[in-house]
Image (cartoon, rainbow, N blue to C red; front, top):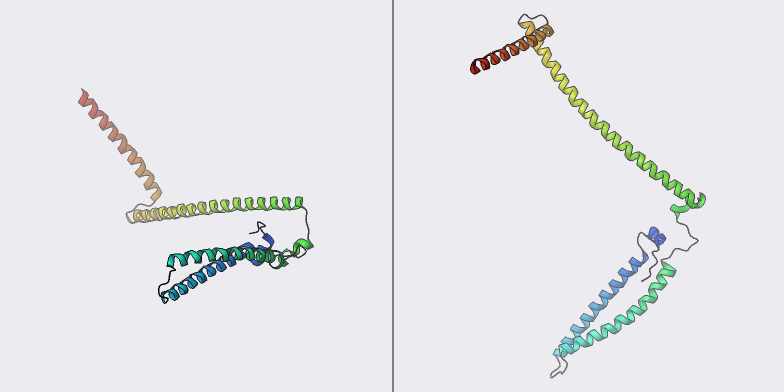
Length: 206
């Protein structure tokens, strides 16, 4: 089997010529084995009808395997010649032929240095795209968080509006003043509670 990768041929055919020939070789080999097995079965049936036959099935099998090795050797020799013919004359694209998808290279040739510069530019664009993609993902995540905060803020404002309406219903004119007064009274109540607790501790220790 040829070691030439034949990449240009693979680009055109969609498969490597070596792979094609290998499959043909395996198919022929399988067919040869099947034919020899069929021939062996026919011989064994013929021998059953011959009385006092000195040939045993083991001897027939040995003869079949020997003939199979002979045929396989001849087949390998012929297939090697066929493979060389196929790879050199049939499945090979001549060096002066350019595939349609590569015509642009003929019309716009560039040097190896230009190719490396173009490849470097492509890598930079890919990195830039990945960075922009990560930034976009971060902004989308932040936007979702802002939506959550906005929804909670809306709920809080709605709650304040409801409390203000309740305050109006109970004669309180300004909800904000009531809220400030409530906070102040809470602080006073907390201070009184702390003072009572300190006095209790003093009484217990005296």
